[in-house]
Amino acid sequence: DGGITQSPKYLFRKEGQNVTLSCEQNLNHDAMYWYRQDPGQGLRLIYYSQIVNDFQKGDIAEGYSVSREKKESFPLTVTSAQKNPTAFYLCASSMAPAEHLGVNSVYEQYFGPGTRLTVT
Amino acid sequence: AQSVAQPEDQVNVAEGNPLTVKCTYSVSGNPYLFWYVQYPNRGLQFLLKYITGDNLVKGSYGFEAEFNKSQTSFHLKKPSALVSDSALYFCAVRDARRGSTLGRLYFGRGTQLTVWP
Image (cartoon, rainbow over all chains, first blue to last red; front, side, top):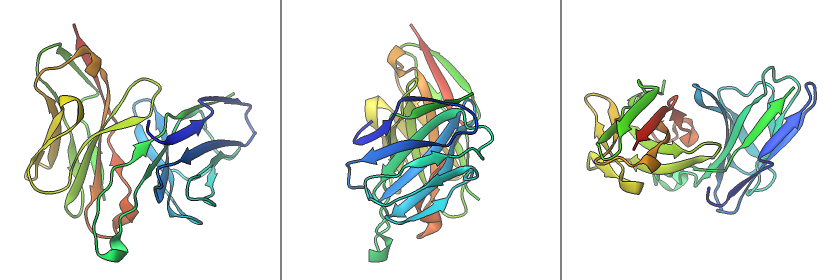
């Protein structure tokens, strides 16, 4: 799981409560990502960030929020507006393409161990 | 639009036999292709990637993948399967066009590989 930590591993919450999932990386990566994994559906992108203080919505951003105040941290908040929050959440990071330098570099993403959130 | 299809939810092979996990993709430009493996309740581990050049890519743990542009496929292979290869395998694609969607990957639904003794 490399230099990416996610905490806690298991998280239980009551319906209607907001909850924040932690993601920290010490790989000096510029880009960070949040995915949701449900059985048989693969990985779906929630939010991603290529640089500090900037982030973009992925395919299923509704009911989630993020912040990127530090390069190494990208916390995800699951709000009460998320209708079906129970899932396995994965954080990932990668070097960002240095396209502004004219280099089309391609980097794989490194994943954390995941947080399993159960909301009842 | 970018997408990945893994047509088999489940692949079963005997230990020592060759294995293939299939992946087809759709992108507007040229593809960058990736394979990841996931063990139960763990994050994904990178196996290999295709960027350009030789169509046969070698990766970790004896896995390799063959890029076929005409068939838009990137099948994962291993000559001799091990019981410890049993896991969930994901194929992912990224559009190679510069600036395209800020480098995000599109994942398939995954294929569960089971290798029996």
